[in-house]
Amino acid sequence: MKALNIVSSAYRATSEEQDDTVVWFVHTLRNAGADVEILLRGNSVNYAVAEQRADPMALGAVVQKNPPRPAEDLARFMEQGGRVFAVSDDLAARGIDATELVAGVRLVGRAALAALYDRYDRVWAW
Image (cartoon, rainbow, N blue to C red; front, side, top):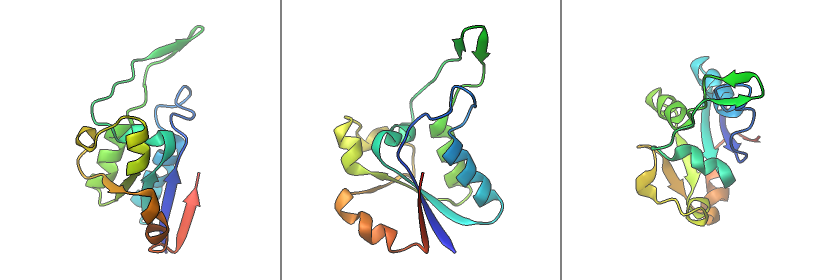
């Protein structure tokens, strides 16, 4: 079974954890042998920007010392054979140029999403 995982909410749970929960989960599935890939849409297209940095932050007395590094997480996912897609329309709406992305991220236009979904046995939206 081949599954496409759509990530549309960005930076969810990153104040508690160092990773985006969906990206981490999909990467874990891939490490266990699942044939899974990622589509970034909406605000999550920001994950693909290579030059980004999140400094540690404090919430009251609690300091999150391991901030999220989504671009690095996506790069590792692709190094292990996973494919990452980003909706080009969503990048444009946020003023993000394709040259700013992690190498290997594939662009897909909103009009081509149905054809992309059709290539998978399962499409999971998180």
